Image (cartoon, rainbow, N blue to C red; front, side):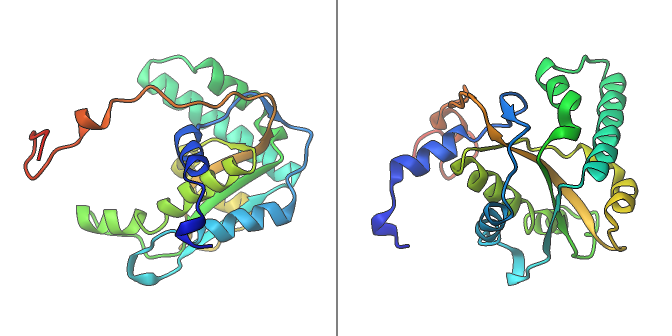
Length: 208
């Protein structure tokens, strides 16, 4: 594939309409292994620091493991809602109620040594794995697969590791619950215009 054959309009649609999909999912339709492999192969084309490939993808389809992870997810969500004094959104509740039925859960992990507290190290560390997670979500969207960007289970590293037999040193970052969409209407979000969030040469300068 070369740049002169890119369908810019289609690329722009995928970039502009990739949303977290918690409703209108087909819980009964299996997501083929080869489709997931295709998406992961695209995800691993993402940029990574120093050219290393410390990312790992754990795809969960086992009903028992999904049930355990779904129960853990619900616990973390409710704890967070209570701590912040907020109610769980209806869309979040819809996902929680059926998370154990989701065809696949994809955990994006890294085997790199944890960073120090310095901002530069944190940026380099997560900047070498999260772009792959986003590319994965885009690849899924292009195939009519809905996913939800969620980091809730990253707060339960040991519990997730125990369920998925992860060895020491593996850090779980994003989990994507994945299913084919079912009458989902994905559209552009209402965001600030580029002119409102872009500065030129100096902070606060809106024009070159």
